[in-house]
Image (cartoon, rainbow, N blue to C red):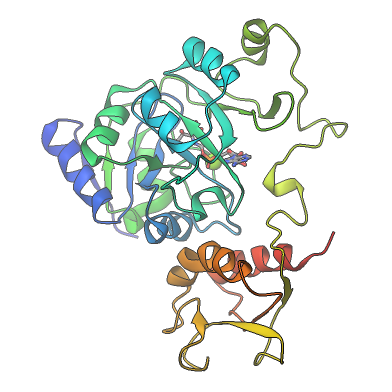
Length: 316
Ligand code: TXA
Ligand code: MG
């Protein structure tokens, strides 16, 4: 594994990083919590690349980073409670999960097919400068290989991802060094999805009530990893289908799919298939009653694709 390029966070470094993001590539950058592996949050292929570079076994939804509150309001259905929390904790280590807004331009893959999106305004000048220069919201999980410890220096990122990441913007050590606190605001009352950089007590003090935790099994959040059937299309799914039976609509994969069929990737490319997965399922679900999905190889991103397909096929 050879070394990635590490650049200073000056105008030249920020501009180079912004150009890579605009081109659909990924870049590691500092935030006050941990280093993020950033991509254009509106670009399915760029978001798929984040999962590929991290080697994530499944498509967990990613946090979308914005440079100001106004930008957040364009992406989600903003609420009074979001306003209250953002006024107190943004910029900062608090992530708010809110419903996707009407005409939300974000990739469906960024929220792993959920109707919600996690959003954060980081308290880090280099991060907000990069988001502004790129001109798009930036999706970013921690910039480490899946299962490894989160990176709080550029050297950690380089050690974990090597040259799988083309560029690291070096902002020195992260101040918070712990991921953001994630609060789900999509239900009747807020739920803690992940403890993090902002103390729960501080949030409870602002809201004026206690917040139950999803780690407590009395609480049932709309949290992805915890639900077997987390992306549930209306249509029935039949997996590993060789071809479509009468009444079924085919979702193909690879060159053996019939010409003209909807195809996750006609050239059998798993990164392309990952980028297309949620958008194509949504599109077919508008008209199909049964969707027959051709087999996808269970390697690399294919494992995550199959994981999500299995969840989508579950009827519970
Ligand atoms: O501090 C941080 O939050 C760092 C820096 C880079 O900003 N980012 C980070 O992202 O930790 P990530 O992708 O590793 O963590 C995302 C967390 C996961 O726990 C995920 O389940 C939750 O946020 N999440 C994201 N979108 C969600 C959604 N729509 N509904 C529920 N949970 C969501
Ligand atoms: Mg992480």
